[in-house]
Image 1: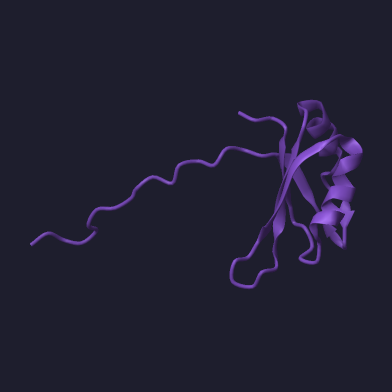
Image 2 (image 1 turned 90 degrees about the horizontal axis):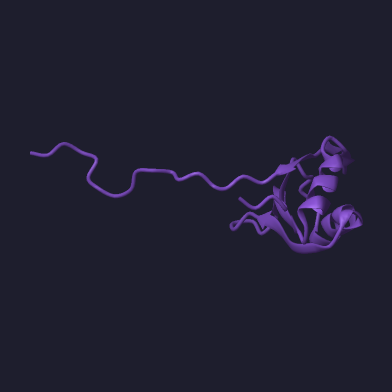
Length: 96
């Protein structure tokens, strides 16, 4: 499991990549920054993923958890692997 990738939630919808980079770059080198966008509106969905070059930098960046950004209290924690959704395919109705 990758321990240098953070989930950042409850972001204001006005935040952009540059603001996120400014907020987190003080903790160390950022390998990847993914601000998740709504595909229909093209606006941010209010969360992002920040991947640091080292686990130590990511751990330091957890200090941003609970801080105010644009009037919202952000949530920062280690990103978890996506869990399988299960199911898939097949016919859901009765068989006659």
